[in-house]
Length: 392
Image 1: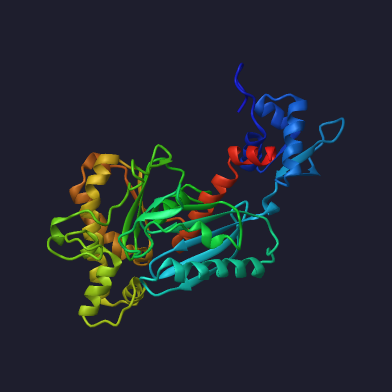
Image 2 (image 1 turned 180 degrees about the horizontal axis):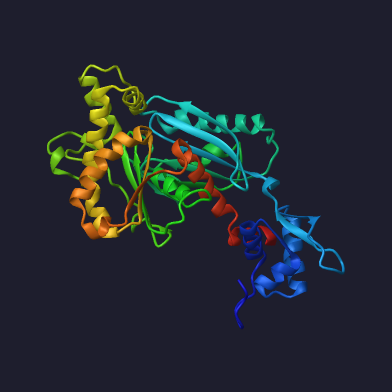
């Protein structure tokens, strides 16, 4: 990070990003890595200490002369909150600034519930979690909120969700007004799962397709290490692609012929009910499959087959290093992926699949929460955000 000649010297926010990435550094190490003078390092460190974002305490190993001290990333300086809203379940959690879980809970809701009914419960749940983990008075740096469908991050609202009736265009920030005035960072559910795969403990690959196979189907696209959103933030809306195998079959979005209509978790539930099984959710189907139910296993494998065939063109176009499988159907991973691999490797080119890895998500059913928190942390602890706080 040494500053090139004539370049703008690193700001306090950039020094903070360096300390956050490394965990701890001495002042002399900061100077060496940034090219800043001792005086400039002192000014930036003083600003960060005043904000409570950096601690200076533990002595570094002595090399002679005056003992140096470490500048440490202050993970306990505050918290971020995360809420991953699904159609029938909402997950909530509190994280410290290092992304460690302090408390978590789950809300079950009726499918089709609107924001006026659900969002007050989300806020109450987060408030209760703050009390549960002893952080009721902690500074809330931000809230990461994810939902199915295309989102308008500027407005803080869902702009198009085929499955969340009544949410389109409704600003969600006002629901948090009594809890916090911190930024509310809204994103699509699959995008945050894809972001979780790039968080510590996830993948170190730069080209990934991240499939969420749950009640619905969605695709997160990471190319060159960057999440791809598309011109209208609709990249990865995979579940409503038209496929020949679904011709004439109604989809829950109101159209016909979508891959979800034959391969989404809701479609598997529909078909298994018709076969006489008393299932209410895709998680019930997975439980039956894992207990050895032949019909549930067949339907999950068929779902994987349909998805693999539909994904083949995306694999050809984008040539990812890995296809990451997440969502509720990943609970029967071996069965689901057996079907998916069968058609994916049949229909995609040999070149595109030669080194392709098909792997489970790194964080299981916590990926939505971890990704929501990661999105929030990256925004509220960015160099620009820290510099703005230092100037305020």
